[in-house]
Amino acid sequence: MIVVAVVSAKGGVGKSTIAANLAVALSRHGRTVLAVDLDPQNALHLHLGGKPQDIGGLSRASVAGAAWSDACTRAASGVHVLPFGRINEADLPALERRIADDPHWLSTQLRSLALPDDAVVILDTPPGVSNTLRQALGAADRVVSVVLADAASYATLPQIENLIRRHYSARPGSVDSVYIVNQLDAASRLSREALQLIEGVLGTRVLARVRADRSVSEALAQGQTVVESSQDSVGRFDLTQCADQVLQLLPSRRDEASAAPKAQADAAQAVTAVVLDDEERRRHEQAGQTGQAGQAAQKSRKVSVYRLMAVLLCAVLVLLIVLWIRTR
Image 1 (cartoon, one colour):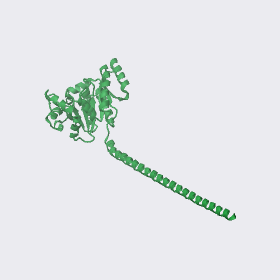
Image 2: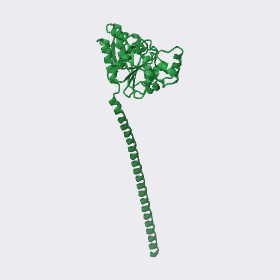
Image 3: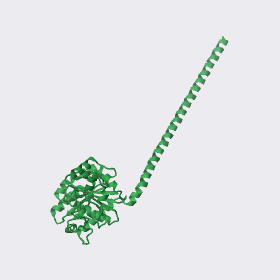
Image 4: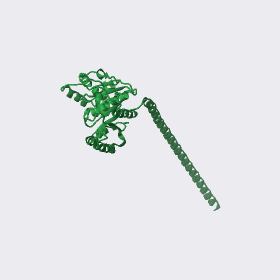
């Protein structure tokens, strides 16, 4: 499965709206999509056809020790939905303690769902700093941060960037997080100036801009996303384009299929390199041993020659002495 965490430094930026519309748009590309609401506000399922009176969700399942799969529903759009659910004030602190005590709580729960490899999990996270957000960033394969084109969102960029850097970017193989600027009012000078400041900090990491559009809230009133709406609007166009951009960031089946052979090839290359290094070392050692043997032999021959010359010199001296005695 591929986990996409939709995050924000503060509430009221339309994070759940973005998450729901992304989920529906991605499902229309043939992907199996599960939308998971980790925000106690429990708003995500309302965008996907849920009813305000529905109380089931992952919070109640977690406290009761039940499987998350038992709390999943399927929306008319085809998106599988796991709401946060409604939980009483006494059980919420217990759930928060469980999350704080187990840093792998979220990853373990997601793996228990046994989703297909190409399934996309959209995590709608709580705004601000929390253990849930930290775990979502740690479990995510891609991170999408939602901001508004206003001064408050610009001021909170360092906070969310620091969290992303510590809990997501530190993971091996992670790619840059991206940003969606939501509810952009092109007619407002302040909105345009805030967008310019945000883009000045983030550059190409601003993936998309979603213009403010009343049809988004009208679709929510009907219990659906604007992507599902038959009405053509700038919000529907922008969010569909936004989903297309996110889809390009996700690994495809072809990428996943080629990842294993590539890893095997890299491993084989590494083993080959080790073998070659060992063979090269052995050749150097053999060459060194041969050189040492040759030097020893050459030294031995020199000693033999010196010894022979000394013997001959002694013999000549003896002969000269005998001849000198006879001549006297």
